[in-house]
Image (cartoon, rainbow, N blue to C red):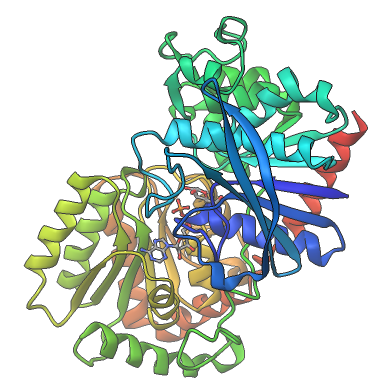
Length: 489
Ligand code: ADP
Ligand code: GLC
């Protein structure tokens, strides 16, 4: 099968969060199974080109209509783990992908609307006809719309779209004029059953467009699939998702075990696994030394996260205070796009400057993230909502016990040490329900209590987490079933 995955991110060349891991892991697993996989991305200036092999220009004269102009684009191709990466590089004064970042620009809507049109132009003009276009999040929500409205009649009539929702908190609610800029007819599309935003009838909702026009829609865990249909987590899309439930489901993410595997990870000082857990101590020691924490036998609690409201940033701050009160050490690696949140954490960093038990690193640092997973004892994830969450899966692989809010994919993957209907071998962490300081403290105190008083039980929890199968094998099979299903209908 020929599968083209279209996304704003793909690790390791363009990653801001879990979407990058998702595309990397699924593309890798599908290619390993013998499928023909291509990932199509914008050619950002921040792309880590050195990770691609055989990078070359494959087209110099792609013409993309946009805003009543024809923009010239080049297309580059290079190879990652067994699949091709195609990069769309517009040459215009807009400099859409030369901004020193992936997201967060005032014209993000135009940037990704342009990209969506460019992807389909490229497929048509290069005479490529993938069986499946796998689109992701609001940035590529216009692709199924453009396919249905303009491109099925230009040779892509057999191409089917699977559309994955990674975060319903960002729907791409934009001025309706964007539709005209990519060659769509706003008058036809700005109606309740198509792209009109459910909350503000003056706006177009790109994610809604993707949901309505894709052949299958899924989100990244069964629990979040239920939550966004039935609770306010749907952020206004509940009725729409409900009415499309015949083509909607939840598929739990995996993690790429060639990237996230403490037995072979080249980014950590000492490799270890469930049968050599004592070697984790060398990573803990290196983490303390790199972060300037005093050497001690206190447990290290970690956060590795985008610092976004979604992640429960107030509770993260409380988690730091509570850890220090319980006599633990804390490390945080986080990056905030929101200036208010960024400032809060900068203030906290200043307040902690003198502490030898707490270190706050603000920024994005892939290799430090690996060391934190390997060297910590527990990871805190107090999300307000969480479509899947990968950090709990990675942490568990590295013998770090997750303390998480019972929501979305966290609830599907973490099973409480004390209160669970699972067998002992399946229990791997701590959960709390209320997104309050009391709720958080209740789970943290139980975890600290076990760590202090029952170290053997705590060790077993780590082992249970490490032995879990979070690989892409099962989820990739599920996506292949979805692809086969939409091709047959
Ligand atoms: P989300 O996609 O909502 O940010 P996930 O848990 O799905 O959350 O995935 C987050 C991914 O991004 C993980 O691979 C995590 O290690 C990584 N990550 C998050 N913040 C940072 C950071 N500041 N530095 C390095 N890696 C980070
Ligand atoms: C989003 C979600 C996260 C999920 C990731 C990959 O960024 O916030 O929960 O794990 O996408 O699907």
